[in-house]
Image (cartoon, rainbow, N blue to C red; front, side, top):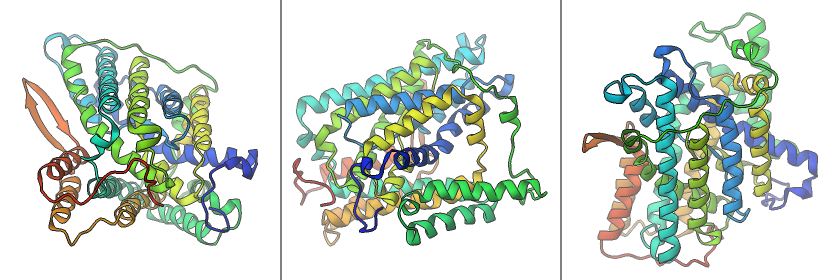
Length: 450
């Protein structure tokens, strides 16, 4: 955000040192959630005490996947791809399989089977991208007007809100400091201090946490504020421990259908980023290109033993807060993630940032996403005096927030879980298709937010 409150489209105007700091800010925004995925997955496989999903591999796949995405989207879309939470249920299901051929499998073999399923999930993105390319974006977007995408974007932010509160509750004082620093610098900061509120919030609150830790303070539950055990045991340099996939039909049926949910979230994220930046990325470079990039990133992660990737709402929040919309800054963050994947000690040091700080930062970032959804509705003049539009939005919001644990069902003996966002998206698309009285016509030349 510059002094005239206008967006910065070319970060080179700020100078290379400032660009590097902006990239670092985006890396911090995605870091906590991205490394949380392998931590959670390893807890599912914890019975044998084996760390099957590596933080290093996760960071490498996130960085390379983001660069893939930018190449596919003509270097136009300022999106970062990090670890997807949508697939956690699939990992847990496969970790608990103990019959048939899975009875004798090691945790590493089970993970390899899960990764094979992730590759097929990535291929499903490519299939949808091809369909959109063949039938045309205008026909597809008839099913995704602002009355559908706006409430979905709102749900993306609000569905993340509980995790922000949970993280912050581990130490409300530190969380409040992180939140306060962000607000102070974003409102009253000058120059670069105004553009880097997230980075400053993390660094300053981490400094406070460090002081509290070494002066004997603990979290309210008695746990240590900082934990450097992983940092101490990690090496300075080391290649990520890549694993190669195995294709198992059972695992494919567990993991691949989750792509339905993540593709719906992708469309919502593209709408959110378009509204934030003021460019219609769904038309140019095109939804087929962004889906292609996301699918390739997900398949690549599965190929190397990493979690599926997805576009990150946290970084959309940073775009809104900083007003720096240059995609090259996101690519810098991707390069940082790749470099960190070869420096385990530094990766784990950044990973030592307390959950309370992540929670304090998330209060702003997740709220920003929902605010973007509201703005998308307002700027597209969605008429809520129209009962049709009111019903669609109401059902989306209830589905997106009400199904907090998703919806699990079985088909042919295979358990499938739809996330709350997938349920909301499907409900909104179906209602928009069947209810009469559509009052919106998609214009692929229309620029969102202008």
